[in-house]
Length: 231
Image (cartoon, rainbow, N blue to C red):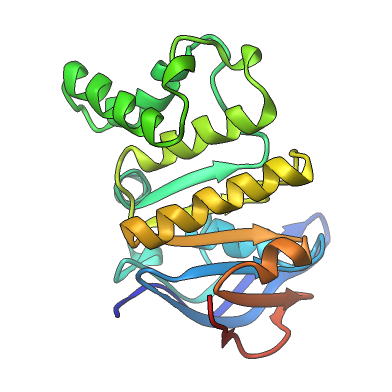
């Protein structure tokens, strides 16, 4: 299996006034196509900075980040934007749905950026909403949905471009435990049926250990070598 994510001795330093904060201190790991991985650590551990590196939302101070075989530090902003849009699907804790758009319009949005024909956008959005069980809600606005339904809309929006990588930031953090379990089952289904690489960033040990492999980070460093466990 090919590596879709590679971090090689990645250092990320933020300058805050007269102080330097080293968010990552030489982090290295690979994630292969089709893996289901969690990146787990407490607040301030560096896990969110790892997510920003994988999501091409930030660049390393030093070291190498490769996404789908491409070194992000050598790409300009336009190239990074294309890579994000075509390769990575994002799911956030607070959903980030557009309130003025209905469910169908929210899910279609990434295809609009890809300049996909409107009729095809509608067709694909209806299909992916059916897959997440929200066909009957496609013309509802986000404020008319439950938290679990909003997260399923966010997952549908992330998956409509058929990304190689699904990157989820605390995807169950705003949900009750039962709804959180349902969302995790949805991630497992996407991973197993579509061979999508799923990466979940979390502070929750229960969510982190539910993944196929757990990468633990603390104070900007890996706690121990990532180990594969059976599904």
